[in-house]
Amino acid sequence: LADWHRAYARLGAALYAVSAETVAAIESAIGRDGVLVLLGDVAAGARFEDAFRTRTGEDPRAFIARFSGALASGPALTAGTVDAAGNVRWTLSGFAPNTDARLVISGTGYDLEYSVRTDGIGMYRGTFGSTAAPGTYSITVFSETTTASVTIDTTR
Image 1: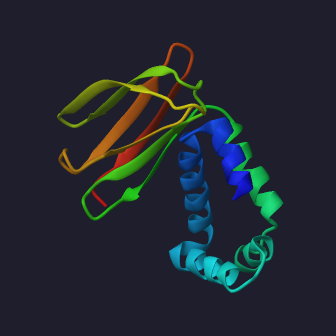
Image 2 (image 1 turned 90 degrees about the vertical axis):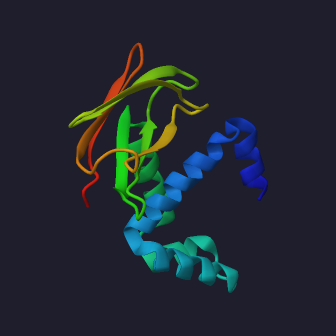
């Protein structure tokens, strides 16, 4: 808990976004049920590091290095899968902190453009899909110095 408070003092509310991305990465490796079992192991008294290694087969330090290396590798726009409501969550990372950027979403018969502002660590999260017809769309974000894009398919 003390580490959380120290990190929050440095990053502010952006720490929650980083935490969500971390949990999503763990969940993609071992599934939601695996995350719940891992947390159950910790609740039963196991050290997190030991439970993590048992459930993922990976040393936590190696995971952190791989995860943080992916975040630091430069600008990226990543998208998840379509949820039951027809939305896709997407995450922008690797942009300069507290930077204004232009977001463009386009697809068959759909064009939307608006401004976003990255948080204190250069991330922004959004959703797209349920307001548009199912199809393939591109999301592109432009700042003065950086561009990232991703293609999403909302038909799944």
